Length: 98
Ligand SMILES: [Zn+2]
Image 1 (tube, rainbow, N blue to C red):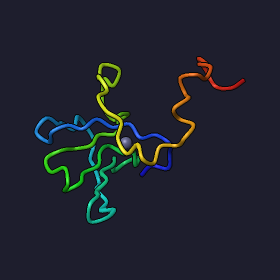
Image 2 (cartoon, rainbow, N blue to C red):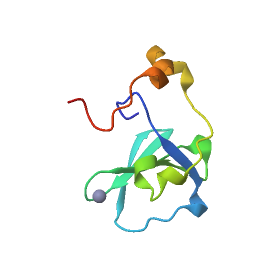
Image 3 (cartoon, rainbow, N blue to C red):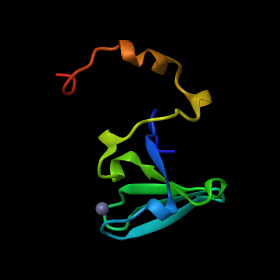
């Protein structure tokens, strides 16, 4: 959980993961969930879950080139907010609301 209507992650094998700099701290949230984050500034980096052994669930903002990814699936759609299916019909703004 992140308190947002969206969470964007990239699932990668632990063997394919490389932390390029900094140190991480890990918090055991539940028996099924651990969150690892930057020890210095608290930026979330990845989650792990024994249900997905060998996989790190990376927060998309923690990787170098998220625009080059090819999204494959939406998950946990049973809790999707009803109005989200109409997002493509909204105006796109280059910046925030003026
Ligand atoms: Zn940091």
